[in-house]
Amino acid sequence: MATARTTRYQCCVCGDPATLSAPDYVELTVQAPDLDGHQWLGAHRSCLNRVFNVEIIIGE
Ligand SMILES: [Zn+2]
Image (cartoon, rainbow, N blue to C red; front, side, top):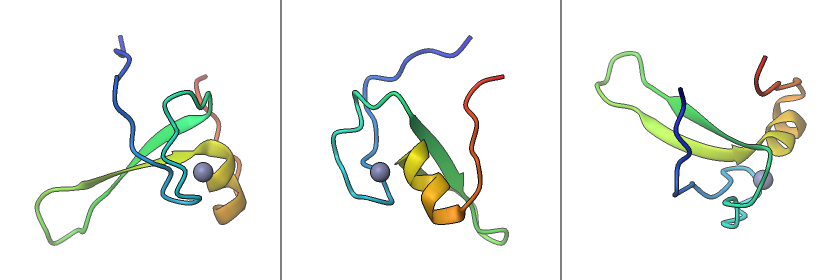
């Protein structure tokens, strides 16, 4: 079961730091294939949909 996080990253698309109350907040990890480690990114789902022109669905 997922536990709610108390900290969130600012939206990497619009730069809004007030994502704590955003109902459509999502997190992404990016990783370089040849490097160790990864980077977390936070975003509004609606921002990602606008940038990538895809529909991101939360929960099934
Ligand atoms: Zn945003």
